[in-house]
Image (tube, rainbow, N blue to C red; front, top):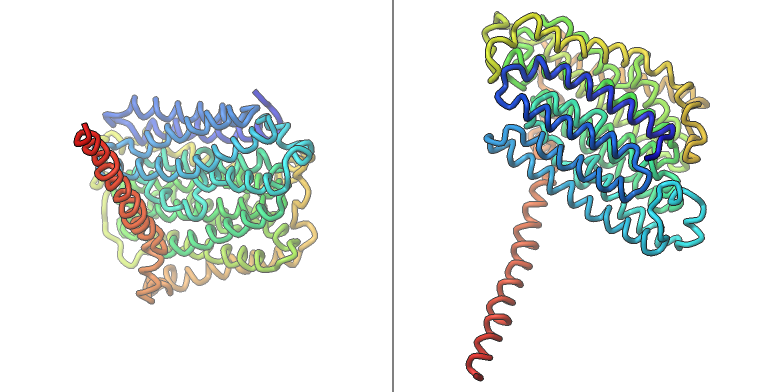
Length: 516
C-alpha cells in the first residue's frame, strides 16, 4: 500500500466522517429492523473506500473502486422493499458502471502502451517517452469517464439526486467524503498524468463548469431538503474538477477537504429535521416549527454559509483558492462561470434556510406528534437526540476552523504530485471582495423572496413556468437517456439481434435441414 500526503489526508477524511456518521446512525436507525444490515453495509463501504485511498497501483485502485460502487448500491437500495429505492440503487449502479467501462478501457490502453499501472510510474515523466501525446489524451479522457460516473459529472449526473432514497446518514456518507469524492480523489491521485494533455484538461474544465451550472439550476426549484444538498454536491464536485483541470492540484484537494465537513453537516442536520417531522419538504419543516430545534438549525445555517463561500468559514477559503486559479487562466469565461455558480449556490442554499427560519405560517406541533418514521417512539428520547446532535457540533467546529489551516495544509501537500503550483487567490485581493459580494447578493435575493416579512416565498425562476419545468426535469437529461434506450438500444440493436436470430441462425438451421 502507498501512504503519502494525499492518501493520509483522504484516510483522515474518510475515517473521520465515517465514524461520526456511524455514531449519528445509532440514534437515527434506532429500532429499524435492518439495523445490523445497515452497519454491515456501511462498514463494507468505509473499508473499501479507505483501502482504495492507499492503493499503490491503478489495478488495485480499480478493484476497490468497484467495491465502493457495490457497497453504495446496497446502501442506496437499503429499503429495497420500496420500489423507488430499489430503482434508485439500480440507476446508480448502472450509470456509474458506464463511466467505469471507460475507466477500465483507459487503464488497458495505458497497460498496453506503457506496460505499468503503478501510480508513481504513471505520474513520472517516463510516460511521455513511451506514450504519444495522442495516446495520453485518449487514455486520460477514458479514465476520466470513471471520474464522471463516480463524481456525477455531466452527462452522468442524474443518478445522484435519486440516491437520496437511502437512509439520511447514507446520504451524508455518500455525498461528503466517500463515494462521490472518490472520482475527484482519483483525478488528484494521477493529476500529473492528466496534466500531460492540455486538450484533456480543457475538456475536463468544460465538463466541470457545465456540471456546476446545471446542478445549481436544478437546486433552485426543488422543495426536497435532501435533493437540494444532492444537487449542491454535484455542483461542488464540478467546482473541484474546475480547480484541478485549471491546473491547481491544491485548490481541488482543499475544496474536497472542506466540502467533506460542511456537506456531511448539512445532510446530518437535515436528517434530524426529517426524523422529527417525517417530511423532506423544507417548507413543511418550517411550517411545523423546524427553527425550534436549536442545534440543527444553527448548524445547518452555519454549513449553508460555508457552502455559499461566506467568510470566515472553511468553504470561503477553498472556493477563493479555486476562483484564484480560474482568474489566472487565459480564458476569463471560466472565472465568470465560477462567479455565477457562487451566486446561484448562495441563493438556493439560503432559499432553504429562510424557508425554515421564516415560514409563512407556523402550525403548533409538538415534537412527539410527527414521530414514527419506522423507528418507534424511542427516537424522540433526549438521549437519542443528543447521540445525533453531538456529531453535528463536532462538524460545525471543523467547518468554523478548517479554513484557517489552509497554509499548513498547502505546506503538507506542496510538491506532492508536482501539483501545488497555481494555488491561486493570494494575488487577487479584488477577486476576494467580488466573490464575497456576489455570494452576499445571492443571500440577499433569497432574503427578499423567502425571508422578509410578507415574502411570497416563490423564487424568480419559479415564476417562469417553462424554465421551472426545465430545471425540475433536470434539463430533460433522463428523458434523453430514455429516448436513446428506446430508439437506439432497443429499437436498432434489439431488432438487429432479433432479425439475426430469426433469419440467420434459424434460417441457416432450416436450410441445413432442408438440404439434408
